[in-house]
Image 1 (cartoon, rainbow, N blue to C red):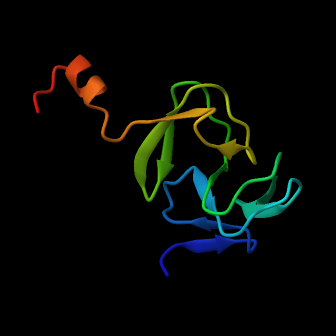
Image 2: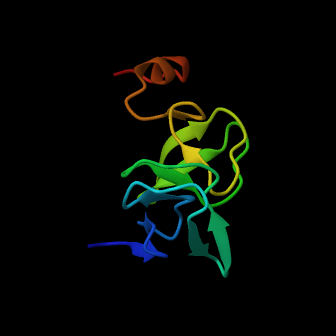
Image 3: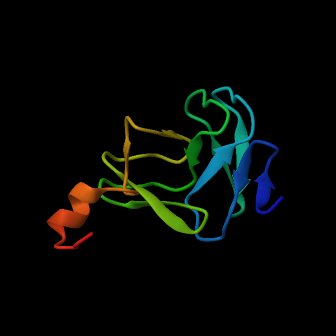
Amino acid sequence: MKGTVLGEVGLHMADADNVVTAIDDLEAGAELPYNGEMVELAEAVPFGHKVALVPLERGDAVVKYGETVGEAVEPITPGEWVHTHNCESTRGRGDRAAEDGEVA
């Protein structure tokens, strides 16, 4: 398996990632070590979902696998579940490509 398991809670796939993937259904209050500090989960997070490691502001890139996978649509605090309520996918967005002048 690639990546690093942080605190037996989350899978950190690449150094550039600002989120980890929950490796189990996680309870609020679970902690994972990151950059010499502990990140406490603010809420329960389902298996396979993302957890923020750092503060993200509206418009910040959500990075997983070393790639931008989404954009924060509201401020996100470390330990918060990152999902459709606070993150919008940037993959397969033909609407954005058209806005940017890209031609398919």
